[in-house]
Image (cartoon, rainbow, N blue to C red; front, side, top):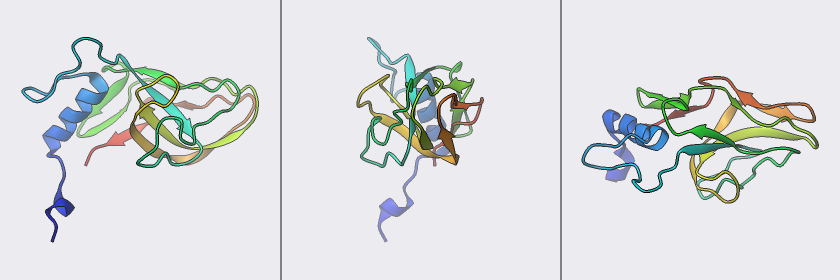
Length: 149
């Protein structure tokens, strides 16, 4: 039996790791937030398919008229972290669709406001969202769930 089959982070470290990524909280004696130019925002993107393990923020990214990624503060004001889980601490609202249409099936949290960007976390929506002219995609507080384990 391969030991890697049973590998996972301890619960305390899972929570600490999420706090580092989403709130910029240092992990004592292990990791500090960047001292010279840390990210102050993370960027939520919408996708028409799974980004996959090797994808980036542009992989299957939505392109409807007026679409843009949404900046979410990398702090407790942007993300709530508790019990090895993380979710958006406030409404995440995308621009209203001005043209074209797409079906959104996935979201990602990454490092860039536009362009390639590194995907930190990705996931499927609970149900797909049809976006067409006049529709403004949004996620209520707590709707974007990210769990470590």
